[in-house]
Image 1 (tube, rainbow, N blue to C red):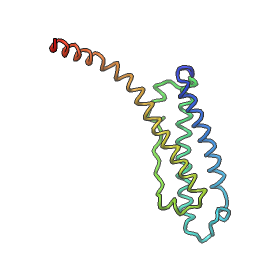
Image 2: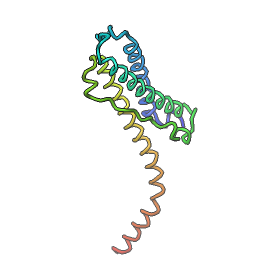
Image 3: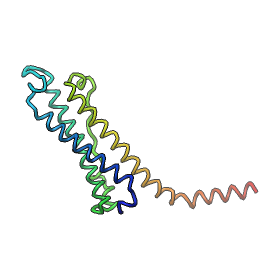
Image 4: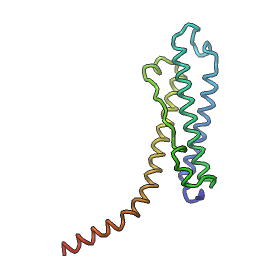
Length: 159
């Protein structure tokens, strides 16, 4: 597979990869701050929620980046279509954040949660779209003789 066969998809994957890497850097910088710098006191019960959400954000980003790297490797000719479509290279499942917990977090943390959820949602839709496109071509070729047969039978009955 060459980049010239899928120019739009290659550019989209590259753009999403850059976005994911920037988000990962931002999340790392934010969540490694001292909780006091995030406006949390040592006795604040939200600190546990912050820890859990930082893990969810990180998990979403790592799943996203891993999937995007696999896509990039495929378009660079480093992975075959068979390797790319193995279950181990599928976009991983991530636990959703509880909106009530997220609403209690500082604004920057809320934004990171929402942005990583949005990114992962776009990648899930893209993965489904790419898979449907891939399977659609296979199914179309497989169904063509049956469709042509039905069309011929209908034409003969209507004539």
